[in-house]
Image (cartoon, rainbow, N blue to C red; front, side, top):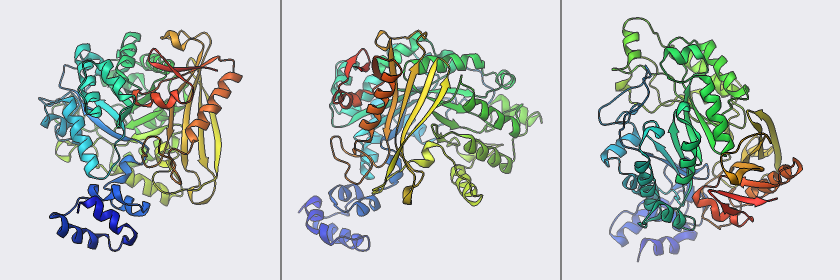
Length: 509
């Protein structure tokens, strides 16, 4: 018999206590010890399924995210903290997990995707909703022909089918068994312009990571960042008006700053209507050999914070983070061998969470409130947060639980942008349109068209938020709604009456 037949045969007798005994008995029948990935997909007990998964948290935000690294290329930046390792894109080191995999595979986009999908499949993760995070040097500085080739190779690998063009690969992905539900790129604020954004949309990009680093003109100048805060504001406005989700990179502990100044900058980042990221990566400065900052440290011109001070700063940043922002990362995954000063602890998030809990406090960021995996029969409230933003209004709609075991948990959310009537829109299809920049339901990844049952995905929460957003936009005088759909989610929006116009899904309301 095959392993699937054996698991199906014994399903009713399986428990957490005896599953390993059955695994050994199955091994005798099939001639090898079956992997978790061979077992869990044939189980019927949801508790057993979760127990058989390795690092289930990786797909508990509703998607399967992973990084794909572009090849080394000249970087326009001269930042004093940035490491440069031969054979690697600037700012990346070869023993970081994603970088290590990319270098081993000669930065081949298709092979990186195939390798990561295979690894996630084998460790029990569902990979039908893939979120691609394109990393490397400044994205805008790469040649456009290389970008197109890189993206085509990623789509081909996700599809499992070779195509003749990027457009053909994208079209296939709209209805493929495994789909791309998001793509992000990394760049500098001063490299964001209308031409670049148009290219991003052709490639299928839905999110941009902006290396801001500081919200202080003196610090930006002293670290030789090469841009000012006006560049950040302009880039943010352009990206929002194109419907893109925005992630800022923020770097406490830089030369010329202080714990008090880092906290002040975090307040500016969230309160000033020119800014306000949807996502945030906090990367405390690390002193790495070969950088100008290392020379400053050697000469006594720079002294990083003690770990105690840094933890205080990070806790304050978490405290200040509003409910509409998600903190994706709190430290770079850099090996201790590279760091001569500044913390190299990679478990800071866990340390902070424990200290906040001990102090009776909690972080309200999206990541800390996501419902994650599990079976929940909760009574949900529809909430709305509205704020001013440069060039328009930003509305954050959410379904959250206000009582019971899931009190304070976020089940589903939607980002709605209402641009000012005077705003110049980059794309014709966005003229006169309100814009949905993101719809996301949390919880363990589910198959397409599969009812969520007691789980959080596929229970209609996203559709309800869409209907509410359309109603709000109509009341505010907008006649159409546009969605910055990923390639793999276009079919979902078609089912709600949207049509593809340019690179957006549009509906007259």
